[in-house]
Image (cartoon, helix red, strand yellow):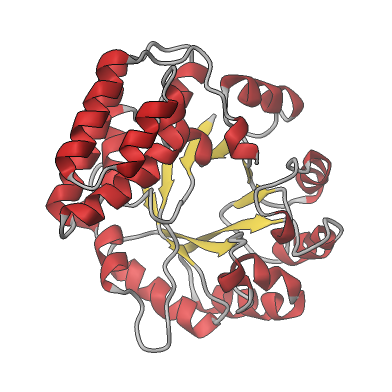
Amino acid sequence: MNYYLAPMEGITRYVYRNAYAQFYGHMDKYFSPFIAPSHTHCFNTREKQDISPDNNKTIHLIPQILTNCAEDFIKTANALISLGYSEINLNLGCPSGTVVSKYKGSGFLAIPDELDRFLYQIFSNLTIKISIKTRIGKEDPKEFTRLMKIYNQYPLEELIIHPRTQTDFYKNTPNWTVFGEAISISKHPICYNGDIFTKEDYEQFHQTFPMITSIMFGRGIITNPALIYEIKNLPHTKQTLWKFHEQIYQNYHSTLMGEKNVLFKMKELWFYMIHLFEDSEKIGKKIKKSRKALDYETAVFELFQNHNLVKQVDTSFLKK
């Protein structure tokens, strides 16, 4: 099985990716949070830092682009090629309202004829490997039949399918019926993405779709970095999680201006990881309310010192 780390804006940038690779590994590909090019530039400062080869030396990074303008995609792809990248991912999955309102991300799925023209242009002008991360439609899963006909016309490196519509956001259950239909008609390798939060989720998926050899993990890994260890029946410890946290925390101090920004980033992460610990509600509130680095460090030390890891992570909060 090939394992991929999904892009999550605000969390899975290079500081997180490098720490994950060092302490947990097991990812075959890491996908960058999307690059949003414009007519005036390919990358903003934060995007430049995130995709810089110097900041991704130990991982296999696939930059992801979000745009509905073929010209901007081609220009950005050529800039990425000049940095040494050999594969790019097109984001057709982001369900954010601000993105969708501009017919980008999963909003692009609502205008399939224009999407078809876009793909024709980029594949006519680029030889780099291009994969697509897609949802199954804007509002109705029936839209995916038309979308699959479009995808099958082009030499995709891979098709990563999150079987929800844009209007589902992250609610409801991933539509495995439509995913199965996609497998039967796709001319491309398929990767699955969606609600693999536990070892049991993985095993149920693998039993249902044994032919799929690539899975992309997102919130499941952010919540439980050791998830793949559990899938592979490998041991993992709280000490590893502590070192992982410390690496991220210290590197944010080195790369971000001011402890307020550092704490904001760490609190984003703890929204997920706090569920790894027993009886963690009160200490989770302490972390959330921290205004100073010392308060944050004291709370996190108390968490690791006095609370054990849960035997089974409760991921129900991810399904709300």
